[in-house]
Length: 88
Picture: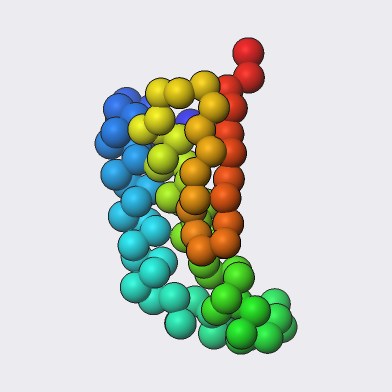
C-alpha cells in the first residue's frame, strides 16, 4: 500500500476516487476510442459499457468508503445496482 494513501482518511480517499471518476467521465469518448483500438471491441460497446462501468467502479468504492452500514445496496449507473457487505 502506498504510504500516502494509507495515511489518508476514508473521506479523503473517497474524494480522490470521485475525482478519478469525474476525470474519466470528462474524457469518456477518447477512452472509448482507445479501448476500441486496444481491445478491438466495438466503439458502441466501449461507450455504453466499458467506460461507464469503469466510472461506476470508482464511484462504488468511494461510496463504500463513506458508507458505515454493514449492507449498502445502491444505484451506481443507469440500470446497474451494486451491493456490498463487510465480511469478518
